[in-house]
Amino acid sequence: MTRTLNKRIFADIRFWILFFALLRLYGITNPPLEAAHSWRQTTVTMVARNFYEVSPDIFHPRIDIAGEKTGITGMEFPLFNYLIYLVSLLFGYDHWYGRLINLLVSSAGIYYFFLLARKYFKKEVAFNAAFILLVSFWFSYARKIMPDTFASSLVLISLYYGSNYLDRKRSCKNLLLYAVFGLAGILSKLPVAYIWVLFLVWFLSKKVSTARKLIFGAVTLLIAVPVYYWYFVWVPYLVDAYGFWHFFMGEPLQQGVKETQTFFPRILNHFYESSLKFIGFGLFLFGLVMSVIRKEKVLGVVFLLCLAGFSLIILKAGRTFAFHSYYILPFVPVMALVAGYGLTQINNRKAIYILLAAVAVEGLLNQWNDFTIEPNAKAMTHLESDLDRFSSRDDLIVINSGENPAPMYFAHRKGWVAHNEQILDTAYLHSLEHKGCRYTLILKKKYGTSVSLSKELVFQNDDYAVYHLSNP
Image (tube, rainbow, N blue to C red; front, side, top):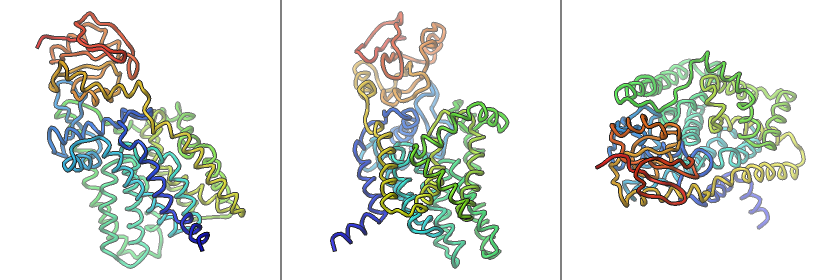
């Protein structure tokens, strides 16, 4: 009896979703200073904190690295940031709410991914695919303060409800949930919209009535209107009106194609190393081969449609895709599905369990460093209190962190980020003084390297030094 019960529990994907969610609670309150993409996380937390401290206007998000300007700028629709703000209204501001929100939404996304796969494939395929997704690149990014798995999950949920509407009798509930989750996901991260290319399967099917297609198409167009307005009208307006560019909207297609060709090996690396790691990628290739041999048409159509849609994302991003591994995240569920199918083609159940365990061990070990903060980075958490000794929160500062905004977030100030070469340029510093810059923060170990300035030194420790630029 006990053995049967244990078998049922371990065969239930909900157990594994909960297990890995609990595992990721380790260090959930860590500052966003892990090795991978601290800069991306702190651009999210800056906006959330400014909603809390400056203005809750969701249509005018602001960051802290726009110098003397307001910081208002165009970016992804800040739904994720705003959720952090709303939680902060209840408990006071803290960055780690973003980790928890993303973890909850991404866990739900994996469950809906399982439900989707189970609708059109065997339950074993769905279980294997969802388990592989759990330990894939999503494992660490599903608790980062970034909108990528958050938005992907919302669109997967919308895909589930949209497919329900097209598959079954008309249901206002399915249509409404498709619209709500789809709009929220695509507004949060525009590239995740590529997943909706799968709806072509239903639109080309004679089994779906013309009336249902028209209603579904009309709702989709209604979703597209606010998405288009935000990204192609409002974002450019914010940049023009407030004079600060921050958000990457992709390259012109011709340039993106050239950059993709130049950095193609690096782009491929995201597929065979970043996404599922090597064992998982091997299962993905095996699944592709077996789907061709077994003439698994449904899986083939899903893969080819998604690959075609995602290829446009790659071509538009170009060099940026090559140098930012998290851009692969929306495609990882597709690869996990193919890998999950590949596992079901193995007749030995013990071999399947061993391979799943191997994928998990390789995936988790390669990502576990993201759950700890190195000492040099942890020093950033003292920036605010050290600066408070002699500086007010309104003082503008410049930091030698290159293009990384993380130290500015932890300094809890506003101002500029710059490279050492700029800071050593007397004319550059003089121009910042005229714009109201009061202090220069020189990072010695993390995010910057030590340089000396012929200015008044007001603070120094092993990790950073602060120079006074102008009189009060």
